[in-house]
Length: 192
Image (cartoon, rainbow, N blue to C red; front, top):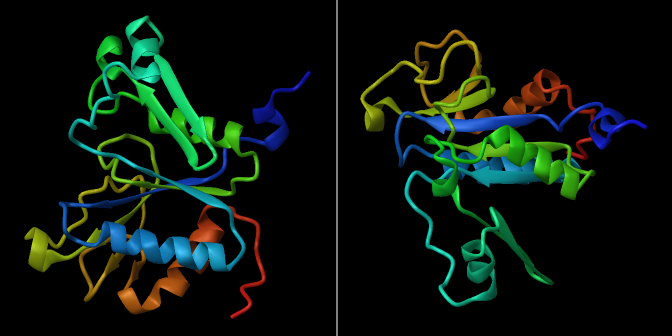
């Protein structure tokens, strides 16, 4: 019997949106990409990496009690969505206590209709393809910080020094066309 992964032919494509530092427009770019991909009919998910500590589960609540009893995960499911609690300190993990590829796999298992997963951050995670937002006037650098082997494109005003295609903020439809091809997404009638 074949696994769900084999039946689907693998995970949905995933793409990191990175920048040299905060305040350069990653969230703005993600909002626009989400809008453009969903307008074309793609079903997608977004995972945001947060560098700090998340607010802890509330002591005394059921999900907190489950984790105190030894569960690695506790999931609160309701009509409004899911909240996952995971105790990464127990695992002794590094800067990415939950591997983003495993998160993509979990999302794909929960929603086999996902066609794309966008990740904000994870710029230091090896192997994840990325698009970098560059604003030299904010970051002080005109070169991408994303390793060359994973960088698919740059979004910037002006023409930074990049060995990949550069798309201005006014050319995001062209960026989406490029990403559809590079990520191997099934073509859609754009309706535009």
